[in-house]
Image (tube, rainbow, N blue to C red; front, side, top):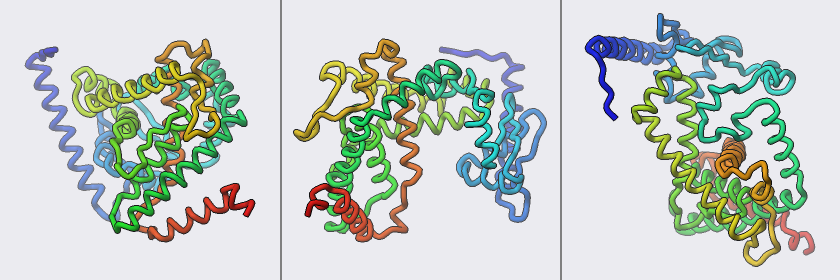
Length: 345
């Protein structure tokens, strides 16, 4: 696709880019200065966008510093959007529980996370209530709770501990963050699909799907802080990060559709290592007429996968501050105290 611009449009685009480059460099230099306010400057036209872009590499610390200086609440003004930042527990409770109905996610939020369009992550009102009721009934199933507990214990005993033992015996360095990411992905995927992806193994298989999910969240954050017209233009032109997101969408769609097709072929329950059948989340949706559309089912499963994976992943630790023998001792103590055979002995 070829896009042609007039000379006036080319001149305007050049001026805008030069202006943004100047503000970006100014914001970067200001952010390095000690003793100055971390609050972003509100410029004409672009407002606070240059300060945000200059600190995207350190976004969490930057927004935490803003909230600290602003007193727990801050209105972030960027082109085409106002964002309310808060870490006040009262405000968080008001938005998410007390007055939840008055804070819908809206069509723009659904457009940002378009791969989950129709899932519980992007819908409001009655569709959200129906999906929430369904999911609560699925999660409250004793069979699923038992299956999730068995999956967690199995992954620790037969995945995490053997991996740590092998690394300790061979004195091989490894990235703890990557190991925890693999562990968390397996923990989230196995109860969801009834199939263990086995990312946590000695041969360290490819993490394409996990990386693609990270890309969805990273580009989603980028879309939040960029003007809508800007990221939509980048999507039409297929340039980074939108090109990267498009590739991630293909990987995720392929993986989830493969899991759905396997479930349709193999039935609603799975058997692991000759044990009794284990219940999984997908089995509760695969024959539900409300989720006959595979795209809607995929959006629902992806929402659940990201929610479970990110919730567990926030507790991940860093190998630089924890000794491997202490990890092995802690996990061995846990499995000994949790295993029924040890209780009988």
